[in-house]
Image 1 (spheres, helix red, strand yellow):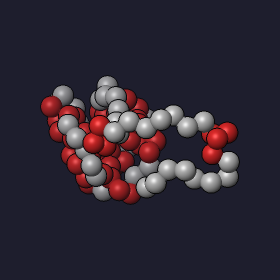
Image 2 (cartoon, rainbow, N blue to C red):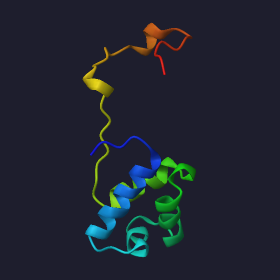
Image 3 (tube, one colour):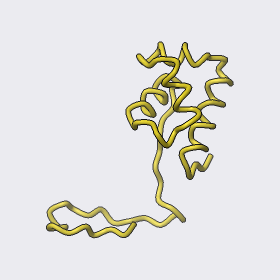
Image 4 (cartoon, rainbow, N blue to C red):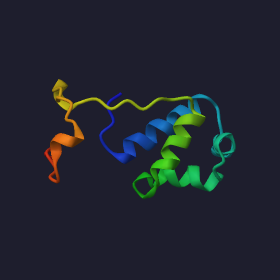
Length: 90
């Protein structure tokens, strides 16, 4: 599944939690989060911390993979080659 924004990510994780028949409280218990934190992630993902995302991924036994857009591959740039400037475009 291609995920391009925080809400589609939270919807995917919510759907996966439900598919596994896990409550928000149970998912939170698995990784040391409160039920309210899981609920907040599902309803307002743009306000959550990355640590919360990775804990939820762990609880649901999911991996996160990042791939280049449009199949374009980038050369590996050594940090020593960058100097003090940012070489990549946003």
